[in-house]
Amino acid sequence: MAQAKTNAMRILDQNGIPYQGMSYDSRDGKVDGISVAQKIGRDPKMVYKTLVTEGHSKNIYVFIIPVAGELDLKKAAAAAGEKKIEMIPVKDIQKLTGYIRGGCSPIGMKKSYPTFLAREAMDLGEIIVSGGKIGFQIQLPVAELQKATGAAMSELLK
Image (cartoon, rainbow, N blue to C red; front, side, top):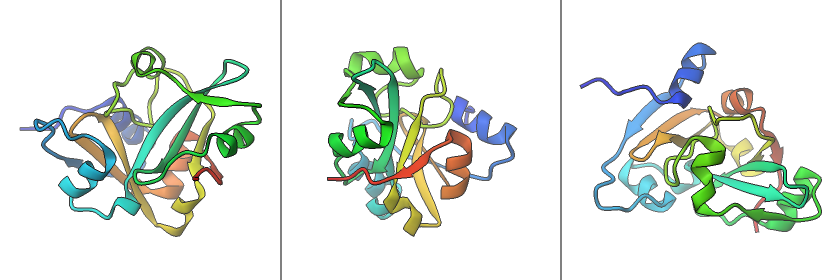
């Protein structure tokens, strides 16, 4: 059965960006990053999660960090040039991004938001991010992810 293309995949295809898609079984409900890394047989250091935040200015920002890492909100605010940043409520993720929690890809959101990638990604040739739906991940070169999202490298982890 052919994999239905997600918005993230279509954007990568349109821009000639190479990637490898990986499916995993999500029926057990374990869709957190560490569980996903185990299911696809990859080191959690390679698997990144997409976090959506709102700044003091009410602007939306996207942060891409390792699944085992924790976003330092002070560092995130500094990277975004904000006084303060907070995670958006889960109920608002789909409205803002077009994706659901657990399937939120940094590629192909409804709008293009300022995006920041954890500096740790510089040590890796490729990383894995959500492919735009639960049960699907995309592995691609870090430089290509930056090209697709406009992500700036930043110090983001606690």
